[in-house]
Each structure stands twice: as C-alpha cells, then as structure tokens.
Length: 347
Image (tube, rainbow, N blue to C red; front, side, top):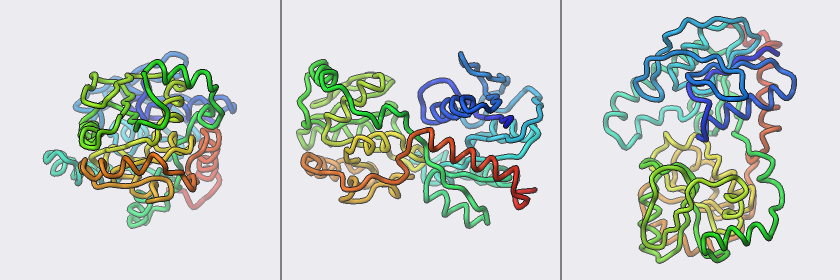
C-alpha cells in the first residue's frame, strides 16, 4: 500500500513520537511505501517537512500547500490541527486516530478548560467528517465516540520486543549497583518531568511514607527526600529498574496526558503492579487488586498509604492490550485494508 502518516511531531521520545516511528518502521519493513508528513525531518525516515505557524504543540497551522495520491492517509491524532489540515489536502482513504477525547474540559488549567474544550469539540467534528475509519486507544474514548455514531476500532499502543524477553541478571545487578538500590525496596516513576505528570505528588507520597522512589525521565533534575533521580535511560537499563522495583507509579493529574500509557504496558509486560491516579485510560486499564491500584488524582496521602501494599503484591492478570508492536501494526493494517475494501466506509 501507498500510505501517508501525518503527525506534527515525529522525532523524539514522547508517546506519539514513538507511535509515529514504530508505525513507519514496521509498515516499511512489510513492503509498504510510507511517507511521513511532519514539521521536522528525522534521520532515516522519508519525511515530507511542512512549514507551519506555531501557536502551541496542538495548534500548528500549515503554511505549505501539500498534495499527493495515497491509498491510505492516517492522521495520528485528531486533536492536532496540523494533522487534520494536512490529511485533508492529501488524496486517499482517511483513517483518523482519536485520543484523549473530551479531556480538556477536565484540564487543571482554567484557560484550557474554557477555551480548550471549544477547540476540542471543533476538532472532533472536523476529524469525524474527514474520517473513512476511526481508531481509538482506550475504552473510554470508544464509548464517547460511539455517542457520535462513530464505530471506532480499538487499537492500543505497542511495546518493543525487548520488553517481552528475559533480562541478563548480571546486567540487572549492575544497574542496581549503579544507583545504589536494593531489589524490591523502591517504587519507580518513568516519564516526562512535567507538572501534569504528577511528579510532585509522587515525591510528597515518598516523603510521607518514608518510601524510596526512583525517577526515570528527561527534564529538569528532580530532588527530594527518598528520591533517586536516574535521568534518561536506555531501554535495557529502564527494564532493569522495572524488574527490580516493587511497582511502577503513574501519578498523572489530568485525563489529557494519559490517552493510553505505554509506561503501564511496560510495567505489566514485566509483571509489575501499576499504582496510578484514576485519569484517562488508566481508570479503564488498571484493575484494583488485580494488576495494580488506583487513587484520586493529586491525593499524595492515598498514594503514600498504597505504596507499602505493593511490596508483596503479585500481578494476577496481564491486560489483553499489552502487545508487541508487530501485532499492533497488523491491527492498523487490517483497518487500512478495510477502508479500501468495504464500501460502508465510502464518504
């Protein structure tokens, strides 16, 4: 197939950047002719760079007129004005991925709640009007879009194969020694150092419970009592810390930043419990007492009370949506084929 993937950001290590890169890699590997449309070029990928007028990450207005004939045009996020605008200029059946649907109205920032919700409703309408097929990453978004008479395909984000393979024990011990840690005696945070990710909630809970925590992620260095800041790590070192931790904590403050949570999948792939705030996809994916625990967003006291429980907790069931990228890309391929074959998707 001749496929166009459209997303305003494809370089880097954020969740959507990883999705863009993995889709491109596996689709190309399978013989498809793939072009990425984005605002910046990435080494080793066929990227058509589009000049934009940038207001914020989601609102980037294309200044270039783009064109091209494709069998499938896939807008990787419906909330991005760039994605929907560029996709509408290209010829081909349109697949639109919706994520974090109607979440800006619960954003902690008042401006985003008032203005962002209007923008979000506008982009939902534009995305649904454009789409021949719709995909979502979590059950909550699927339920919302079904109210718009859409019939979304539920497709999770995937994991690299390394997360499903045994880790060398000597290497794991070396990583523990590197950060002066004891196995099973710390909780782990993995992700961006960003206010909405709730890092401060995690730190307060550690101090209150006198529990040790390790923070892995890019951004400003984080300091605090009982906190070890590991910075950005390669996948194997990160896996070593997941395997050696008692749990992975995801203390996010907003539905908006947890459309799926690859970090939760990484933890479950290594059979570690997830302690998460009940936001976004996490409130559907975390099953209390089965694969982890939930707490109210921002409630560091509740998190502090849960942390000791994680030391002896064993994951009883791995969610069905913890899948390798190979399987996830096959699911997208099936959607692409269906848009081309099924007359029900004609606009």
